[in-house]
Amino acid sequence: MTALLASVRSLKEARIALQGGADMIDLKDPRRGALGALPVKTAAALVRFVAGRRPVSATIGDLPMVPARLAEAVERTAASGVDYVKVGLFSSPRQRECIRALAPLARRGCRLVAVLFADQRPEWTLLPQIAAAGFTGAMLDTADKARGGLRRHLEDESIARFVRQVQALGMRVGLAGSLKEEDIAPLCALSPDYLGFRGALCTQAQRTATLDPVRVAAVRARMAEATAREPALLAL
Image 1: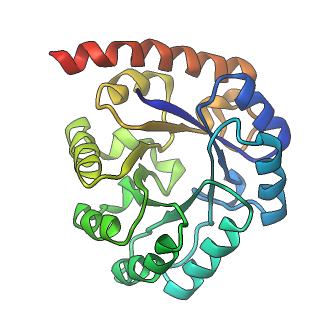
Image 2: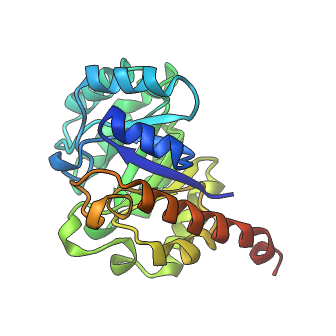
Image 3: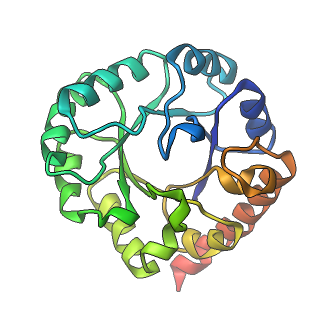
């Protein structure tokens, strides 16, 4: 069943997400970019607040593809106590080098999630290397939120191929990128492990605004309706 991941930046938002039925709590600062990072102290406080009620992930920030810098950011973020650390693999000739640099952290037990960007011509050929490096998961997102959502950049069949390939490699797969309520049913039909939301959960659907309990409830209801159909769709 596809889970609902809600991105939050404060204790108030984390409380709204938990009360609204989010399955996963994702920590990031949307004012700092697609994967803007929260300060480690803030992330640690939010981990303590969630207190194991839901898995918690956190982003390391919109960082350049410099292996040593990524590894340092991953270690710093992991020290906050989150369950998963999300790493953006932005378009760069050094992507594979960066993946190799993070493999030792994965071997030490850090659960890494690679984020590929639909609006940057993502390389599916990276996925076997990501899996071999010990990453726990991979997800699709969008880097430039002004250029539209995930399904503007990739056809559903391409997204479905991504989902199948990631799952075949033994990793969890997530889909995000300015998703709207109308994206929920078609994307749940592809059976990803989770869908990630920020803007759709916020006041006036603005990702830099505050989470709105009414919008969180609406997305949760759509998710429940869509996931109830998943077994029937898989049986067809």
